[in-house]
Image (cartoon, rainbow, N blue to C red; front, side, top):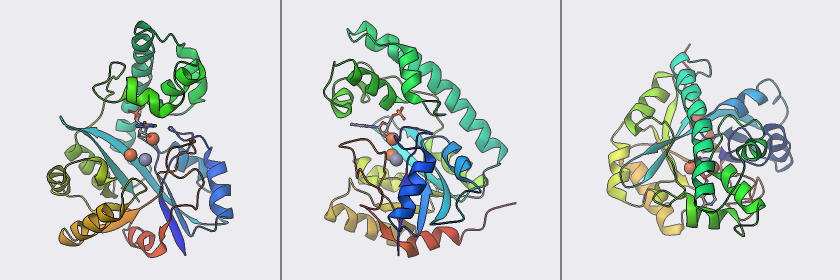
Length: 273
Ligand code: AMP
Ligand code: FE
Ligand code: FE
Ligand code: ZN
């Protein structure tokens, strides 16, 4: 029995619709799947009531937050999907992601890589969370770059010339938002934070879990975060960070999995009324 607790869909920057993800989840025999789109629950909502067959659907989200030195992603699980403040913040982020994408199109165009905002929106295909990967896709499509990874390296990573931030909460406010909605807050892929002193500071914000298992963690990072989770008495989680984007993380659901008992631990948390 294996699970995947970190999966993206077309509701954010994944390439597979929630329904396609679910078909793949069934055929790969997963016991539990958490849909954790960036800053949106639309993928979870799209599957609600349609998952009688196959894995247990765990509602999730992945919030982006910024620190001066790095980006920090915080996963939320098992929160009340109808929580008003959570939904208010999600709507604010989605709206600002749209204006940011439009400004980003102008910025990369001025840098000598003309693209069209309407084309970015078409690529995003109605995603609630329009993001850098959609802009990158448009730039690759125009033939300026060989792949999305190169676009990030040259233009879209923080501190690169095409980058723009979007509205987001602080890490502390994000943890509070998730917990006030009855959910569990989990620090995503701590290896990508790049500094374990910062990881410890994030865990000190009241995090409930740590994403120990992630395709970007090598054996030694995984062992280090397993020990850190034990030290802080945190739930251990993990997942594939599946996006369905060629060359980025596992390209097929079921390739990178975690033991199902990690999912059971998340389900123990009752959802607030
Ligand atoms: P955004 O949320 O719009 O700021 O875009 C950030 C997202 O872009 C991340 O969550 C990743 O899914 C994706 N991303 C970040 N770096 C890369 C990269 N080097 N190659 C491909 N995708 C990336
Ligand atoms: Fe992503
Ligand atoms: Fe992430
Ligand atoms: Zn992710």
